[in-house]
Amino acid sequence: MTLESTSDGRATSAGPQLTEISNAAVALHREHFGRGPGAAKTHLSDNLVVCVLTDVFTPFEKTLIDAGQAERVRETRAIHRAATEGVYKLRMEEVLGRRVEAHMNSIHVDPDVAVDIFVLSEEDPLVPLDGDFPA
View 1 (cartoon, rainbow, N blue to C red):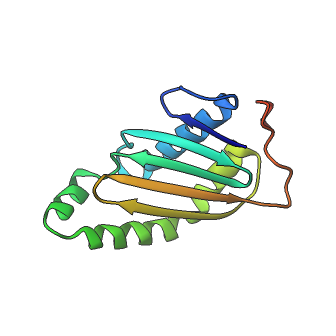
View 2 (cartoon, rainbow, N blue to C red):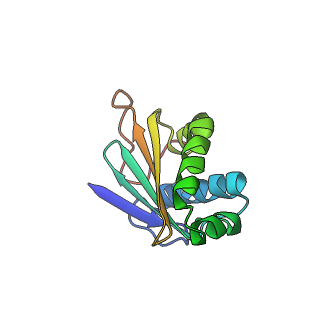
């Protein structure tokens, strides 16, 4: 079963948990880039959590992109992701009550989109789908 929610509070049956994941993704982006994304939408399927963030680039990054330096933005974001992987994994583990095996991130320039992917441990029990999530 696949569930999804947005950071603006619209949600499916697992709404509160998915909204909390979206909000955590927005907060992490804000903490590390100085501004939050325009919107976030979270999808949950088995042991995979995908957060789609739109309007993610800072004014500085937009200037580089406009100057034809999108690859530099990608490189810098990749370096940043490697440096902060533990922080992102820990925050999502706190929200999910599950161990995060891996965190991956990708950006797209036009449209302005980033995707955070979290792979959850297969060994831990699956996240309940009835809304009774761990505290």
